[in-house]
Image (tube, rainbow, N blue to C red; front, side, top):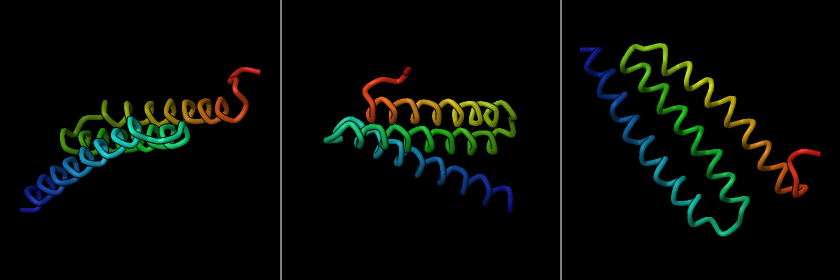
Length: 93
């Protein structure tokens, strides 16, 4: 019974994370300013990271956890680069 509860809760979490991705995509496309779009992109990669983690739990595979860690590192670097570009107008000094 506990396996069934775990599978249903993971399924519900994936559905909610999918809805969260749709909401962040909407904000990224419609966002009135560039700052809103960058914040939505940051939230999008975090939600995608969580979706990968739930998929890894569901399939019992280590590959998804490694992909989530790689996505987290690259997403952080991308967010810092975009924020620096908005502040100064250039990324490389």
